[in-house]
Image (cartoon, rainbow, N blue to C red; front, side, top):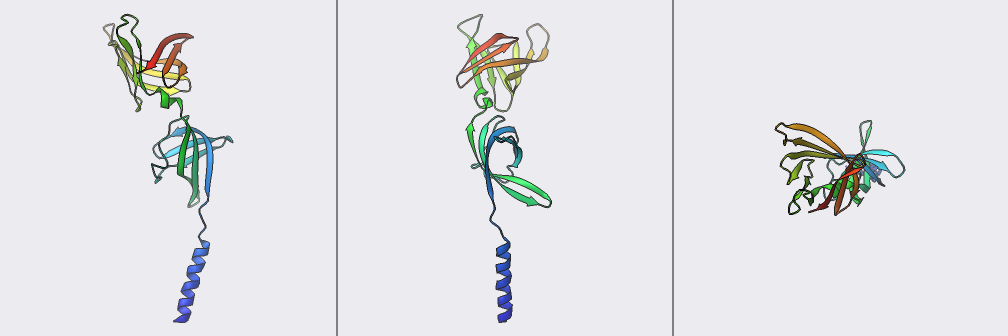
Length: 191
């Protein structure tokens, strides 16, 4: 019985000596793509990392937007012959323009200064018009410095669908200036 107990203790010590402490790595970079379960990060060194958010604590690894600058801590998990980078902590160091562009943007109506017109850019990528009964915004997308607005024009007795590609000339917490072909189209203030 004594020999059996010694054998069990040796086995336990052998197993525990094989367990290695998980190494954690910290990187900084810019979010190139993000989904509910993954983040593609371009590091400051220029490397591209695909990092899983599966099973991550959402308080420690919050949602991110494309072009957010972040500092991220991850660990490497071995699954069969594959390595999975698993996010553990994430801090946003600088918000992307997506963070600022969402919201209600208004300007005086050029036909009636007592009224306003504009657009609501919602977090889910949908859009709606403010004070424009004939131009109905439906969706929006930010592609670099271009704002793509999908809309329907219903003012001419027929419905015309289209995507307006506008250059973002200025974007901050309070103002959004959009142009097309070098001409300013809208100068919005945040509601």
